[in-house]
Amino acid sequence: MPTYTCTAAKGFLNQDQKAAIARVVTLAHAEVTGAPTHFAQVIFQGVPEGDHFIGGIPLAHDHVFVYGRIRDGRSAVDRKTLIRRLTDDVADAAGLPSFSVWVYLLELPAAAMVEFGHVLPEAGEEAAWTEALPQDDRKRMDVIQGGLVK
Image 1: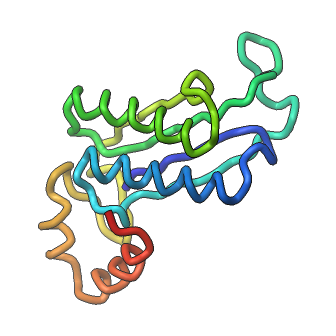
Image 2 (image 1 turned 90 degrees about the vertical axis):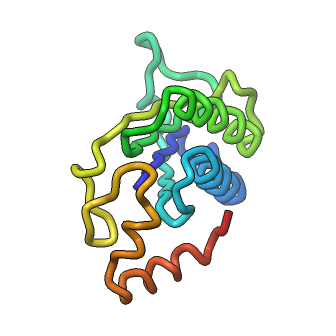
């Protein structure tokens, strides 16, 4: 459901930092929204030197950019809490000041998304949606969820 793409200069983040960032992003999303951890995806992209510009000049500072695509239906308070938490937690996990972490959330209607082979539920309806899935699909999801339990 939520897909977070973390972008930084190629080679800037090591595997331990990526794992730590993936964990804090997943937990922040789950704890703020109430969605199960197995819904969260975190993808890393390395940008080659000279391919990222801010204000028309090459980016010369250490930054991590977090682009979150989440289902709509969250309150303004929850969105603000999530953005602040992502900023602070990613900064800690990457060893950066919060100034160096930029977060963007894009909200999409649940009916415009398919995951695990099914159209997604509205925010807050995850438990009923999961319960209504075929047993084989729920088993596959349980295996994924076993990786990180909130």
